[in-house]
Amino acid sequence: MLMNEYLERISLTLSKDSIRLIETAGQTAKNNYLYIQEAGYFKTQYPYFTERKNLNSFLLVYTLSGKGNLRYEGKEYQLGKGNIFLINCLNHHYYESSKDDPWEILWVHYNGWNASIYYEEMTENGFSILTPDNSFLIESSIKRILSLHQKKEVHRERITNSLLVTLLTELVLLSMSGDSFSHTMPQFIRGIKNKLDQEYLSHITLNNLAAEFSISKFHMAKEFKKYTKTTIHEYLIDRRISHAKEWLKYSDLSVSEIAYGCGMNNISHFINLFKAREGVTPMVFRNEWK
Image 1: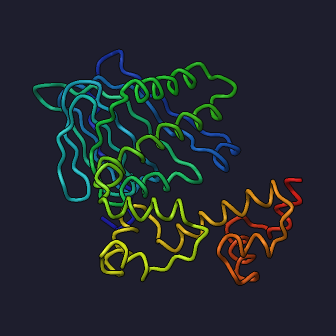
Image 2: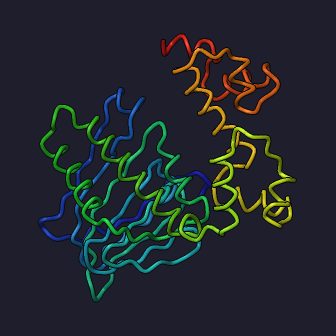
């Protein structure tokens, strides 16, 4: 088979009350939203399976009951009640129902201008099967999407976008907390974050932080980025820019006074940093708000 050749093999052995919707999104949705390509509810019967490759779509599958198996990126996963996964269908994948405990699922094939962002964030530390605490959010969101498109609601594409964004955002956060991040963040990283949050207007250097927390500067920088997804330098700048925005909105301080007050002695550098993050200069930002 050629590298980019489309592959699909399917055995749709399903109950009579299973649902499969195939949608054609409007151009507005394709240009601006997350939109569904297909969605459904399947109560499968063995030997239900699907094998694909090189399909331009992302697939979200939530297990309501029963058991299934997924083969993806060279690994095999067992699926049970409450499990959910998100895959990029350009990659080879194969999933099937258990022979002894038929698989019941809700699923959505979606795409859109920023569709890949959620997948990339969820798999930044490797692909995994998730088990959300809030099963109601998952089930109700997908069922609402199905209902909207079954009834051909006028605003279904806009509402579907909102539902998908909320759902995928929750899964991204779950994938982060389910790894080794927020709830297992080392104490010294928490200490550094607290110091930056409270003293960001002061002169802070990596050497001073490393000395204060008795850690190698390079190890500190590496671990901080691992757990916060940003560098110490960028974190500090973001805090200072946020404070500068508050002063620009609610004070009469000059731009140079605000720059100095935020711990930045080079006015041109401050203006460039501000514009890079906000898209406008500090004075334009001030005028827009006033």
